[in-house]
Image 1 (cartoon, helix red, strand yellow):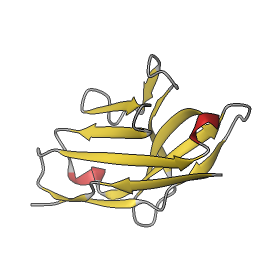
Image 2 (cartoon, helix red, strand yellow):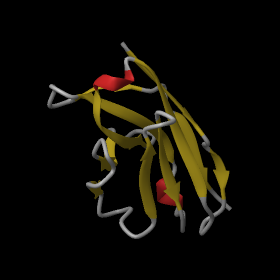
Image 3 (cartoon, one colour):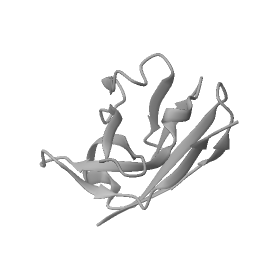
Amino acid sequence: QVQLVESGGGLAQPGGSLRLSCAASGRTFIIDDMAWFRQAPGKERDFVAATSRRGGITNYADSVKGRFTISRDNAKNTMYLQMNSLKTEDTAVYYCAAQKWDDQTYGYWGQGTQVTVSS
């Protein structure tokens, strides 16, 4: 019903920046909230940030507050994650997720994009 494709991952130095994108296709009109999660090697998948459909409500994990900014462009069916002041502990596979308007969970997931922060 909904397909999500992440892009923008790669290698960055500590203190550097990266911008992730998540392009949605299919029945995008059913999407409500969207979010970013990440999973580091050997760890569980963690919440990073979320945004409401119109972008007016955002929520961040404490570990990224003040450094990451989530946004979305509904006309382009794309969500973004601007990551600044990157730290080595930000290294992970980043996943975008979408919630159907009548659901309480994130039922749609992308395949993930690798972010590596290293000097």
